[in-house]
Length: 333
Image 1 (spheres, rainbow, N blue to C red):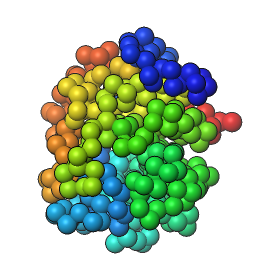
Image 2 (image 1 turned 30 degrees about the horizontal axis):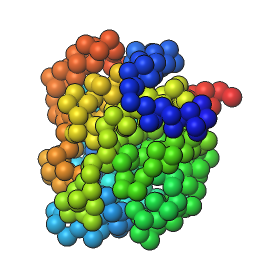
Image 3 (image 1 turned 90 degrees about the vertical axis):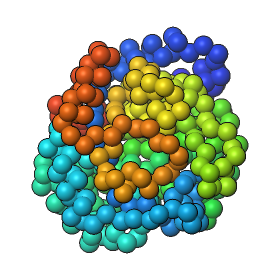
Image 4 (image 1 turned 135 degrees about the vertical axis):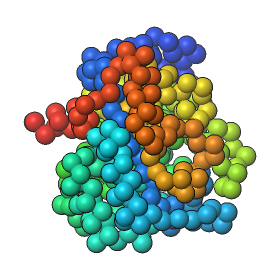
């Protein structure tokens, strides 16, 4: 599809056929498999001032926390014992966890024989290289928007080109690379979202997360309207059609704004679910937006309940590490 065609579909009043086709494409290229990722939010300290984020550095109402290495490792081990094959460790941009600390955590998690995704924000190429050498498999760094003016407005003091450079460094170093955007940022256009989707293709991303913006009361955007779940679902479907063999999560922001949002997203091209396995202090205080409704799992019974939910959609939980088929295809070139 070209940009004009993408814009036409994003603006369409009825998307049922697009959703059905995206579901068909997902099953054709990725099978009826849903990959589960156990999410550990290990620090809500952040040096950035992103206008839309509830844990930005300027928010004085946040109860800040950091998990110790022992807490992170214990949580990862619990996730493995429950049945997860992949752990995602995520934080704000927190320099407390330097190369030595992070590499120690990475090496010890990898000894558990599970896949590891990092979501730590912008780092130097030296840091990314160290993480890869320590055993990290994947890295998630959302671009949020490829509109340079909008990016600058939403990310005070940040360098758009550095964000782009980080993504290409991750690809170059051999990470299974993920990115994504917010749908419905104040000032965002349909044309901008179309450009974002084409950027995913140009980057040859292995995973793309798309979710609606949700206003947080302690940010400058507190009175801004939330993003459209319908538009977010269209963006998911189009991304699946254009990039048929990548991984796409059913994001928690869609679940938060839309009843049965997880199930609906999985029928519109998504094939990943990221349950939260974090300790309670993290679940309560990693508040990038309010009333987060993503699924939390703390035992095998809850894991089996999710398995049954996924079965009801005609899908199965992956039995392997859930490597992006796009990533595998690139490795085999």
